[in-house]
Image (cartoon, rainbow, N blue to C red; front, side):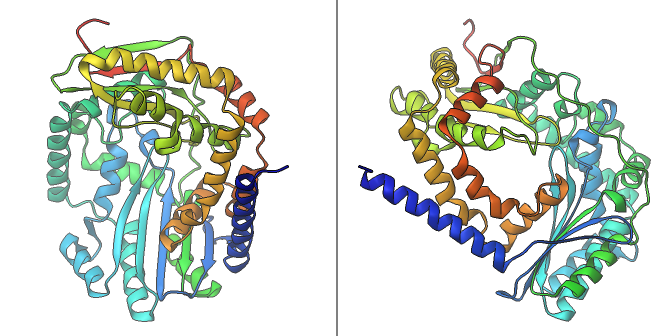
Length: 441
């Protein structure tokens, strides 16, 4: 006989699947290409008199060179600090006049700008006009460039002493070796110091091109209005040659450890290896398994073993960050220095046992229930939907990705989770970084 909790869990999953289908039916993702080659994704919704727009380019950290690390981030920052006909104060005034907000978007793969504005004609048109100038007509004012470079250098020098910054930088260095993903988004003191205004202009011309752009639009307007906006935002962009694909990420040949002394009272511990790409066939099985291991908050294995049973840390986590190439799989925690070695061994042992045995049937069912049950919260605002549209467009995910997500999670079997973790995660070949470690292991 099926237990009552299992029946309730299945009903919850079914309700979420129905909700997702309703959302997709009410908010279909429309796609097309602009005359200049940009990809456009649009969702029409008239629930609020608002418009959200994002324009993304393959201009993230991974497009830096080692000699000019930090160039991508500084270029993006400078785009909104001076455009043809407007200085940074006038840009801020134009946006404030219509209650609009523009902000940069930056990660290892992507760089771009997002806009939120009222959908009424005057407010919308004025805000779009400002975003258009930022994307198409930046001037990179020399005095502002020097000011911003000094600001970045000061922030970098300050961060050099922070244990979390040291740990993250060392983790990426060991995880990715010479790969572009090994570089820090903000750059290094010596590389940023060498950057010139010409470097920024060159990076902008090469990477902010129409054919590479992804325009995401959601809000209170029709398809033809969205088409007009997309053409406006991309028609004046550069017509650069296609960018080369990022190089593949090699697997770790062996375990790599780094113990770094630090005066902080706590040790910062990171464990991981290259994980998965977007569109990876094991994505959903690994996602469900990770919820059990360290992605499910207080109920996860790592939290139970490290915090609840032993009190080594306030929390411990794990996650996958899928990217264009293999993004990191990472476990992290902070603990007292004198407990660092014990906590590290518990984390490693928990991972090894999980890879060997996988989740229990009860953990597996609970993970799927929580992931699927929490799905509506992932798409309950235009801002969240806009981010999903951007991901779908940039990584060429299926247009039905949002509709399919709950069903794909629900379709995962326990055997698939165990098989994926055994094949993809090797506890014997991990990068291990401890900042603030005891003097000797």
